[in-house]
Image 1 (tube, rainbow, N blue to C red):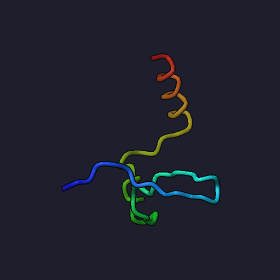
Image 2 (cartoon, rainbow, N blue to C red):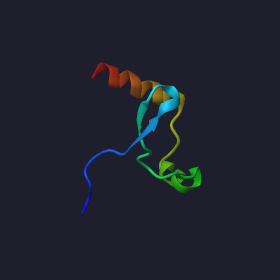
Image 3 (cartoon, rainbow, N blue to C red):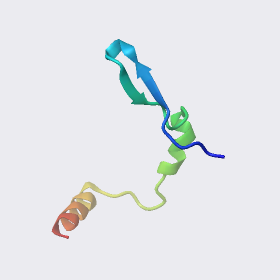
Image 4 (cartoon, rainbow, N blue to C red):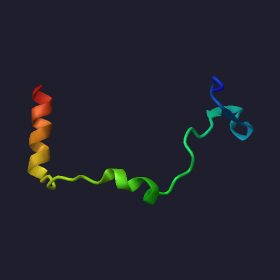
Length: 58
């Protein structure tokens, strides 16, 4: 059964600051960097500029 709510940390040293506890567990870059791979050809700065211009017009 799931519990509803947000776990928080109380940090009294800075005036009883309430801060959400870490939502995700600690990871290393190597654990997640694989999702950054792009299978296509690299984009040039000109390609990126053109895409931005197109997006602004829309």
